[in-house]
Amino acid sequence: MKLHRNGLTRSFGKLRDLFTTETDNRKSDSAILTTVSVALVGLLADKFVFADILMYFNKTKFMIIQDETEVYISDTRTIVWRLEKNRRIILETIVRKMKESNSTSKELQYLVFNRAKVLPPQCEKFASDLFKNTDVIFSKDGDPTYDENGAIIECTKTQFFIQYFDPFANEELIRIMKVSSSIIATHEEMVKLFVDQVDRIIELSNDETVPKYFLSTIAKRAQLALLSYLETHRLTNPEKNKITCAYSSEFFTTQFLLDLQSLMLEESPKTTPRTTRTPKRQNPTKGKRLTESKGLSDSLISHSQIANEEIDECDGEVVDKVDYSNLVSLNAKTFSEQLVQFDYDNFMKLEKRDLVDLDKSKSVSIYLQKLKGLELMMVETIKDEKSFGFFLKVADDCLRLGDYNIAHLIFSAIIKQSITFQKEFAKLSKAKTFLYNKLYEIFSIEKNMARYRASIKRINTLSPRIPIFSVFLKDMISIQQFDTFTGEKLNYSKMKTMTDVLEVIEMGKMNNYSFSQIEGFQNFLKTSSSM
Image 1 (spheres, helix red, strand yellow):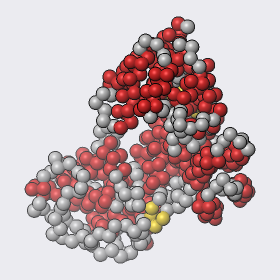
Image 2 (cartoon, helix red, strand yellow):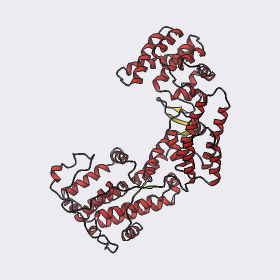
Image 3 (cartoon, rainbow, N blue to C red):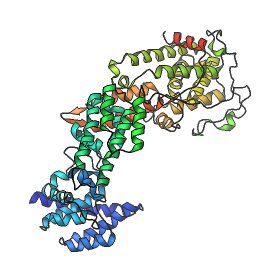
């Protein structure tokens, strides 16, 4: 009894805090919850009177859980912790106060759900469970383990997949499995899970208490999960047959079946890039005025300082027999485009399993060696004012084309050489210094390269981009320091963070560059990257 009283005191205190801290909140739902909390503090201060609470809820049309169909598929604790934090506090306070006053669980269901509907028997079971297992249900510790706001921190693999197919669960789980499924489940396991979910829907359809419209709700979640998974995973023919046979019932929409058929006909995952026209740009000409890129800080160099300066362009003729021993005589724009195309072609060779199993991936090692070779070529070339200026222009062009990887690689080479050849670097014009400062701002290591991360997120989803691979490696190595499982508990936070990192790479593979490859350039880059 003492334990229950302590729980009641804590929940009542949270209820007081709720209307104290959110009085100034103007958002509609928060405002309603604040109003309800104020009223409940008064109504529950002395003793619990069911009729008074019910009358107030009817008057304000307030209900704690707005969709009672959740009780058909989700367990009580999951439903409670999926509630918005303030609703959960209100529910806990009412439950504990009702238990203290010896009220019934049947009364509780009418305070929780829509009183205008005929509630299914599962609603009373839900209320009864709240009464019997109050401390367990409202505890953050359990399966899953939640944080204060109801976000999952850890859960068992079984619970994760229950949530994955739960139509009321966050779609974030579907996003996670689209990208990071391989670290917790084999491909065969996933196919079995999708087939089993259809069996689950058929089982529910035989329960007369479950409304037909709810079956379509569950089916839609399964559809969404399956299509998302198939966009990034290849099925064998036997697996295709299993999925096709299972997902052919009347529970699934015609559009879904058409989309499924389309994915089944593909030979490779949908991450195969779509060709995207790169932005048309004018050929560089002498006398072109430098304008500051949108979104960059005005504090770098004022326009007045560089308004009358010209960016020297290298207009060397581009042919296969160009003397590549004198790089700075080449056309900077064309050199940038060929660098980007070369980088992209090698970047696309990295498959999903390479990105997750970095230590075991031969493809990752080869890609890193190529990048190292390119950087060495740049370091050996950048030795005077002209070469500094040329590569600053190339880096800026790569940045405009969305290849942050090569732009950062060039910038790293420039940083190294600016120390060795300080006098030559100091000769840079204000226009070229502006380009350097622009790159320096984007690639600043402050706050874990926050400016770069924000910049790449702003790129239109239809535009091609290549993220900085060294940053990706650093992020992945940092994430992999944490265990995927602690005992039987899956580290959900690790899965979520890894998905965020992998998605940056996946986005880079969604669109292709459309530059025509120039054999001379590509052969030179291939040779240079093998150094």
